[in-house]
Image 1 (tube, helix red, strand yellow):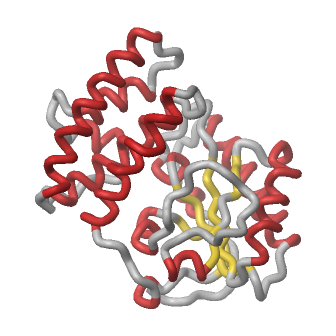
Image 2 (image 1 turned 90 degrees about the vertical axis):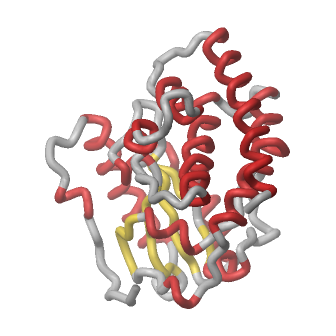
Length: 251
C-alpha cells in the first residue's frame, strides 16, 4: 500500500439505492470527519478510517458507525476520546474509536487512555476490511501483523474471560455478542484454509447449516429476541466454544 495526499475519500458515492439508515449514517460521518479535522492538528492526525457494518452495508437501526482516527502522538488519543464524549449527539450514530501508530506497532493499547471496557489489541491486518475517508493510507509493510492462529486463540480466550462474563452480567448486549461470533467465525475459516467473505450475511450462508454463525445472523436480525431464544443461543455458543478450544490446541 502507498501514501496518498490528504483529502476526502467518500467511497459511499459509488453505492446505489442507499437506505434511509445509510443516508443518515453518511451525514453523521461527514459531520464527525469535519469536527475531527478542525479539532486535531493535521500534523498529528494521520488518517481516518471506517470499519464495521457501515462498510459492509449491513447496518441495522441500532448500528453505530465505527470511525477510526489514527494519530501519531499518544497524547491525542484522549483528546479525541473527550471530543467524542462531548459531541456524540451531534453526529450520532457515528462513534470515534481512535488508535495511535504506537499502538498498532506495539499491538497493545496505550495504558493511559481515558476509557474502560474490553478493547482488543490493534493489528494492521484488520485494516484490509477498513475504508479510508481522509488522510494517508497506512503502509502495512511497516507494521507487525499477528498471525491468524494467534488472533483466533486470542479472540477465543476473550469469549471466556471477557465477552461471556460481561454478557451474563448484562453489561454486553446480545447484538454485541453476535458481532464477536462473526469475527471468530472469520478467523476459524482462515484456520481451516478457507477464504471467508467479510460480509456477515455471506459468511453465514457459506457456513454449515448447524453452525453457530447462522444462529448469530438470525438473532442479529431479530428486532426483539425473547429470553428463551437468547438462552438457547447461549447454550449452543458455549458448546461451540468448547469445540473450538480443541481446534485451537492443534493450530
